[in-house]
Image (cartoon, rainbow, N blue to C red; front, side, top):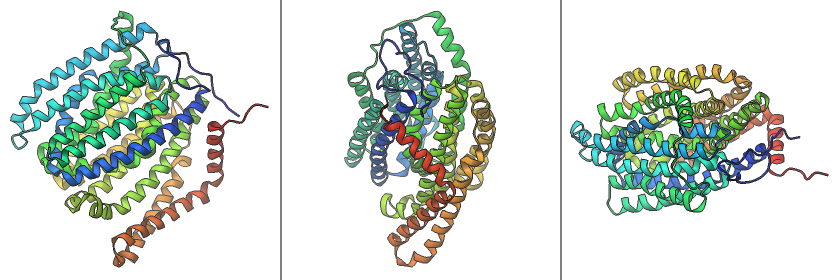
Length: 503
């Protein structure tokens, strides 16, 4: 039985990519997204490993701090124009032209700001003489990003998930060739700058040449501008607070602890995000337009939200637990022992990234149903917790203390956000998280015990033993506790992917 609605109306005269009801297209979109994510994850992981082996922690620290300042400048245009376009059902030609004009104008302003602050940064950070030049290099990425995101937003609105996955793969492949090759030839820090620049060139080429949804034209309709402004005011506040709540740690570590410590922290954060990128990111890309389409139907919206978070929690706990157990061997064999100082920071960051995946899903739900003010309050709470936590944590325990502050922020703001989400959808937090939490606790305990048993047999045997014990215990607990629910979910997904022909 299917509860799906029919296809939405075309945007800007362009027919939606793909056919069929929303639910089926969302499931197929998840398959495309996860398939594309598997490729981009493999490429990105390979790229990260190669760059970690070829470059120094200081290089990553300078680029991370430069990215903070470039992102700070881009907050001037963080009005959520893309989310607004996804939310609006009657996006005709006038709306599209005005949307395009707003993106161009705000991008030009923020790029000028980034260029102006670059010389000042070289003076403020004498230990990082290349910081200002790196800011200038990364500012070019923001120009390319605007032209790419115009087309990708329309692809997302049309539920064109296969095309979006293709763009991701091509961009990731381009960066995986360009950045390590330049690092190998001695470009140093500039290899890290070339990584996002080459990626966005590839994305823009794919979005505009292969999958162009609309031929942009300049337009400026006063009523439409006012609508974007009204939608964007609370969104801008939310996005700005989100920036502070997620990037203040980079600023504080780079400013008070130095480039090398920021390099360790940034790599711990990057590798800890890989479990989220396996499933969560492609699901979120699919769910934003789906939530928007279902915003008037609480029952079906609740079903979509619960199914998404069900997958995120169970897959997230599985990958997070495995990665936490084998990180010592990963550092030794893969990226090199020079990165061992980030081990505890990495394990602490895994907790944050897992909770952050649920947080992002909930925030996108609130944006999709037109409740940006609720999202803004949740972000404000995160900011109030995170800033003093980072300052105190860095002073007491260095980058490990900052990671603890991120965990505390994720837990506290998640509790608040649950209340806002329950106003929109119905779900049981106990059913969602209890058994996965039990499974990961039992699995990690078993993996740690296996480490004590096999530690004398070499690191490879130890790593494989930990993985095997954790996987058996984790999956065993879930199968024993949720067998019927899992079977129903598989049958539902199978029916959406390959619906039976009508008799």
